[in-house]
Image 1 (cartoon, rainbow, N blue to C red):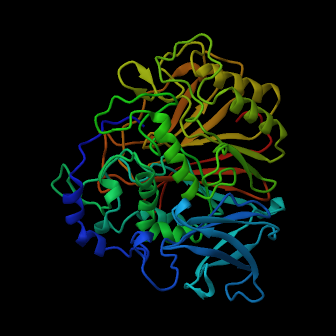
Image 2: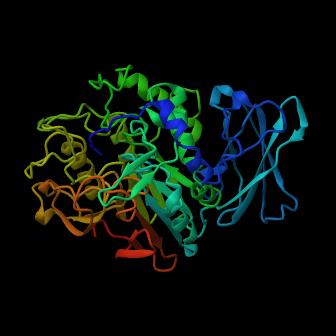
Length: 524
């Protein structure tokens, strides 16, 4: 999402002006830096998370306030009778005192209760207060059905945790729906988006941000990136949500810097480190430390964000990474472009995994939209589309190749979900409306932001024949969450009929749009 960065406030003035905001929220008990912890037992004040949950496995995450051994217990009930114990890693400064424990051999389609205990590594009898959570494993049988929510774009454009409105309220609405999991479609933090203590809105009201030192400037160091991922965990809604709903998380640009691409050298006075590759490595390490992802290991090179998370016989989620392997942003008029937005290797992986999938529905979790024109400056483009409605050029060539493959291999049940553009919409793509015609019809649904500024709807590019069936967007740029509702989507797959229903929701328990798709079809 392109936007004009605002000026960053002085760090000292920011921190002196935020005591009242801090007191207004239920903050983690471990909000102090681990290095300053003096005595007592280890504490897990940042809550717990689970990620990449499948039929028989899942990942559990926690952060300590000091060195500690992570111990996880699981049980079929909240009373923890006859628990199963998992010995986790030793948490220390090399991972910012975070850690993840892999759970395997879990019962399919069941509610799993877990509790995480942190033990003093020198005296295992000294343990902190356990922190509890729960999640459902994916069903082994189709009849159980699947329901999940998705969105993205969190703490963006200067709108952080506002205690006056109860923080990130949309998380509580999503939690009450009791979904099987949450798909976070990228921009999970805004490492390039400093916050100010207060912002005066056009109508004269004042927005107040909860502040931290790391959110007072753009992130450049590993510590600053870690602080950005830690920031959202200050919100009680987020911690409550994380303890109940597993996540499938991908990243996009703002985890590093707006509109970044590999090899980029910044022309931005806010940064002393101009090499984006250096910044991306630091962010990727913090991302791996703070987000439980099965294909990433903190501190170990060679991990990847793109992966398939299999959620029983009804659903496979294909998580894309449109950031790490893309070519530089450009006018996008190349007649030959093998690198594109995915990179050749990731495209081959996606084709292979789609053809192997036996799930009824194949959700393609895309961190950027396909047919919406997202500019990067006056001449370049940030996503796939570049505004030319003719035959595929630039990054469109790679997407055309993929869509052709899906059609000719007769891969059924593909649905594209994304966020990024800070409004909600539904686009139907069909060859009869398109310049490129060798593909089967499909749907793309957009939802967001979850806690960021709202923006007007982007223009459509006619190359793949999109028809905007529904849209809800502000009329001006960077509308605050106090002025416009936040958006998230819900997907409900019926275990009996196999029908997939998408609902685009607005904060306030409002369903804006609903569409039911039939299973077993190459195109919808």
